[in-house]
Length: 202
Image (tube, rainbow, N blue to C red):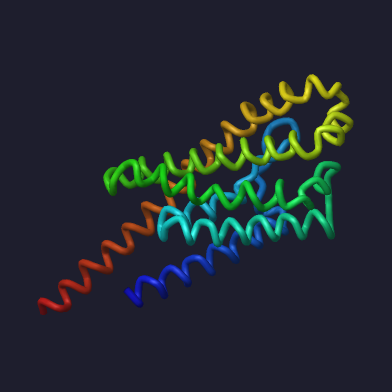
């Protein structure tokens, strides 16, 4: 039990550090068509939840959210960045990514690890996209309408199109990354377990 707790702390700390670096640097974005970018900043949160459970995912999600808030408050880059200085936008949705990803992974009951991890990655990513856009729509509709140059009544359609365009591609990217990382980690753990067992028998 103690070894498991130590591992959970170590994994959470390492992935929290990765999440923080991705949140405050351009490393959390992948170039996309038309000058747009896709975010992969939520992937460490998902991986933490899949590997170590919902508590680890929530901790890493908190790191992700707090660093996003601090960056938005102190060094905004785009016109929408200051909106993430609101913790309802930057922190609350990120606390739920890990829980959703863990629940999705557990649906497979330990079977088909690559598929289960990929599904968890997609679910976690979609939850992040939907909740962030929903929070923005509820807390900053006037600013968003001005930024997009549309009437307030047209804003839900704009946000829905963003969720479908970028959100689905980000979910696919999260599925691939999460499946690869988790499968590799499980493979290493399995190899270590077999090596330890062989050593004990020898």
